[in-house]
Amino acid sequence: MYQYSTEDSKFLVERVDQFEKQLKRHLAGDLDDAKFRSLRLRNGLYMELHAHMLRVAIPYGTLSSEQLRSLANVADKYDRGFGHFTTRQNIQFNWIELPEIANLLRELSDAGLHAIQTSGKATRNITADPLSGLTEGEIEDARPYCELIRRWFNLHPEFSWLPGKFKIAINGAKLDETALRIHDLGLRLIRNGQGQLGFSVFVGGGLGAAAMIAAETASFIQVEDILSYLESTMRIYNLKGRRDHQKKLRIKFLVRELGAEEFSRLVDEDWQQTRNDSKLKLNLVELEQLKKDFALPIRPIGLVGFKEKVDFNYSIWKKNNVRRHKVDGFSIVNISLTKLGAAPGDATSEQMRQLADLAETYSSGELRTTKRQTIVFPYVRKDQVYNLWRSLEKYGLASPHQGTLAQIVACPGRDYCDLAKAVSIPIATRVQERFNDMKKLLDIGDLNINISGCENSCAHHHIADIGLLGMQKNGEEYYQITLAGETLYETVIGKKLGPSVSGENIVDAVETIVNVFLKHRQNQERFTDVFKRIGIAPFKEKVYG
Image 1: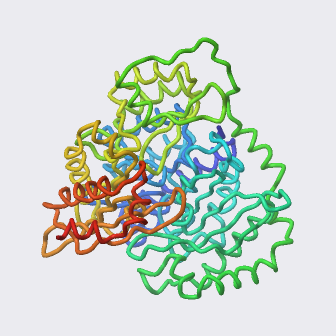
Image 2 (image 1 turned 90 degrees about the vertical axis):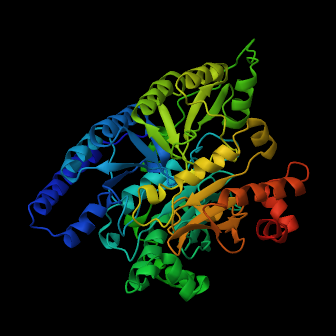
Image 3 (image 1 turned 60 degrees about the vertical axis):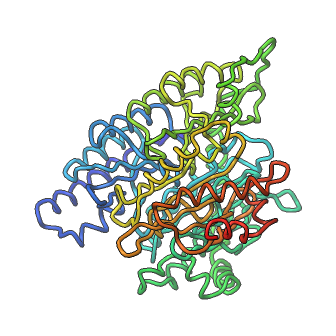
């Protein structure tokens, strides 16, 4: 995996030193809250309901075991012994004391980690498929391109103060684990009819109060031209994006107001002036070197005489949590952090250390984070999967819920976030309790539930089979239900079911929806397939009838 260079490390130290001076001025009263706000946000620091929250970047979702141990140390020293893995592959700490932040950031920089531009109106952490480089049929591993684009656009002087936040995702695999088209900018690696490698470009996606699917602005941009094309895209946004309306800051509103065709025309017009600039050509020599840094640390192996263990509980876990690897003799293992009563995505410092130790034993010291708030071990020998499971069982990390209804994605909600209108974690717990039967979960199969505590949609409820959005009505918590959202095979925003349902009745409504699905399912159809076939009416009738 890629490790930061000496120059990268030097920059991180300088950035912490700079922010420490700003922090001292603020604590001394020389920088008021309003002036300090933009500075802290650009260093990943939010003011939440109870304390400051720090969001740490995990570029393209790849972590070393040593970095995970460093995060565990941060959890113990600066938080309350846990961290929260997010739907954009980052990790958040929710109980940070402001005077300690510079020391915390310095410890992160020692481990090659940072919180730069994980917030604020700038280019955020670039995400990628957590299975990049691991699956059959992939065009190319997206991570080297993520890294080159990160280097170019992080702290780019022209785009350091955009109208709004800007999220980028890149994917080269068959399935869209990255949810490309709900991002401000999504890049899909493709090959054209002549076999040339390039990108199709999608601009203007986003969830929130006005969920939109990104439009394709270019069907094929050659690899070496991608930086100049992205610069033109961001330049049009920077020049024409709304800065006068707090709820219309994102690029999706500009694309909608201009129309995708006109937006594409403006980008292309600008691009024709810069596309031949040699300084804007992607450095292909550097790219090839990066590909070596991201090369898989394994080679095919033959497992002569290997026989899989016979164990009922192991078989259930393996069915849900283990995926086929493109390298013979290896498996991809997905580790769910789901635990009844705990916040989805939360991991204690002890769990982080245990995972770090196991990653060194079973996964070449590497882990990946996912938008489903799980941890991936990308390089597990098939003949060691059982032993890994036994170790995970010992540490309480062998939840078999991956890919089931009980693997709920949720934001921190009203328990932590001052923007939230309703709780998320207690609803997730109640749903898990209602479906706390593995036989029933296996019968239901692959069905996902995402719960957001407000319209900012941090839990991506719009793209879940069943999405719940928290809101307030006369001081009481209610939940709006959306159905049949998805991004894996195609991108679809979930359809609103009808009037919001009270917090008291929402779990009953979820169970009713699941029962309608099971009643109408044919030949193990997915939830979205059933929904397309029967429509919304049967669900609405049973929930509100």
